[in-house]
Amino acid sequence: MSVNAKVVIVGCGISGIAAAHKLVNAGFQHVRILEATARSGGRIKTGTFGDNIVEIGAHWIHGATEENPVFCLARQFGLLDPEALTPENQGVDVEVNPHWASNFFSSSGRKLNAEDIFPAEQLFYELIYESSKCESQGGETWACVGDFIRSEAEQQAAKKWTDIDAATRCLRLCVISNMLKLECCFNGAHSMDEVSLGAYGRYKTLPGQDCTFPGGYEGLVKSLMSELPTDLVTYNRPVRCVHWNNTEKKENSVMIECDDEKIDADHVIVTVPLGYLKKHHSTLFSPHLPQHKLHSVERLGFGTTNVIYVEFDSPWWDAECENIYLVWEDEDGMVDQVPDVQRSWIKKLFGFTVLKPTERYGHVLCGWIAGHESEYMETLSEQEVTHTMTQLIRRFKGNPSITPRRVLRSQWFHDPWTCGSYSYPGIGCSAQDLENMIEPLPTNGSLLQPLQVLFAGEATHPCYFSTVHGALLTGWREADRLISHYSSISTSNDLKG
Ligand code: 6YU
Image 1 (tube, rainbow, N blue to C red):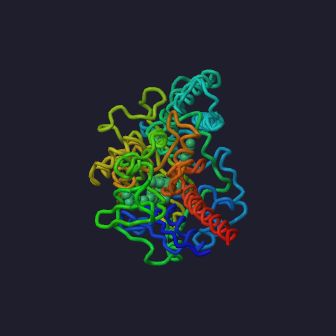
Image 2: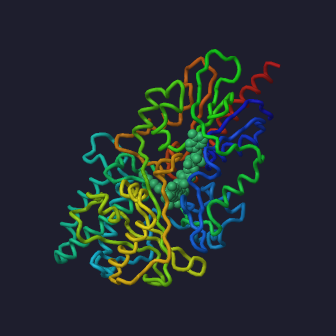
Image 3: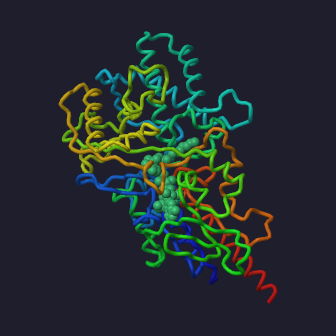
């Protein structure tokens, strides 16, 4: 098939690249990507930290298995470690409480005893699992995951933890606070009070152990880009407005307006992040998005998760440790929000993942922090962040002389083309909201030229939102939509002929 229709894709993240790939391979002759920044990849962003390669955005292939298209592409391009390719790795069921080797440290400077806190960890994972099964039936007692977990944890703690002293009980509740903060990072939400309980189970995990790209996630982007014509992307070309529904023009139903160029096209695939869409929808589309679509854009959640890398001369954690948790003992109840953000933002950082293997990375930790606390952290100078991280680690390790070699943090909220990290099901959002997000413009039933504006990007995947594989699949989905449209036209022309 050779198709002359002009397709413009807004954004050169993985969804835009995936859409372009499929269209070009299907014979579309006029495909162009307009990217606001000077690089491809969007939220897939690999950086350097001392001698190391580190991920500023996406880290893992969530579910290294045949069902995951990112895993299949990475394997095809030879980008993975041999261990990731083993059948044992692909067979791991991550929904069953993932058990990593962990170290827990407390704000009073002691290393916590695993047996004391294991019941809290276990209870938390049970409640998260239950949350994911709370498919909305309407009229639930709890609207958000946070309230459900707190209330159930209180009740079950009273019932089950009868043989421990008050201090251990209190400590376990502090562990639950810590795990709520971890869950905020995983969801990209400010608080689990902002994540819908009824919609939480919509996110689906894939089987298979998560794995990383030893040479950096951007290797995937580079490999895919190398298969596209070199002039397909125009960089530093932010799209200011998509003019659609143009009743006067006979050809090219869409006009894409940039600062110094106006481009006519038959179709535009918009892949901008939900955070950007929330902020700029009123100027990005002319005419405005229909009301029902706008409401859905507002209801879906989009928050911030950031990373803070810290390197040390030598480790202060156990050799086999994969995750370090920092448990604040002075918090009031099970909380995942910090009351005084400017003074105490650091309390939101739940802990670190240890970069492995040590022979490759040395002694590097990746800290995780979500929410408004994380957004505030972005406004501080590197020196201030380094100072606070140093104080934090000294306090939790109970060693006043530990000094990091260097620190590096991400700043996704202040990235003007992303405005946060990834999407989550906000309170009140329904399956219909996702359908509204995905629906092309003009909407069904219109007599105007169909499929003028299509929508892709992680936030438009019904169950793999917030992931790279979800984003990639949405790019393929919208490309397929155009491919079937033109296949059906050519079939009906053949029949007429
Ligand atoms: C994953 C992971 N991971 C950590 C962190 C982040 C993300 N994700 P893009 O933004 O890439 O592209 C859009 C482009 O558009 C971009 O280039 C813009 O510059 C451009 N643009 C914007 N405006 C424009 C304009 N006006 N004109 C032109 N261009 C414009 N995913 O699989 N594994 O480990 C992580 C992580 C810190 C920030 C992640 C992870 C998310 C992915 O990075 C992300 O989904 C995709 O890259 C998005 O691609 P895209 O094409 O859609 O947009 C209930 C329940 C929930 C449970 N949630 C599960 C959480 C799982 C998330 N994983 C953990 C997070 C980590 C560590």
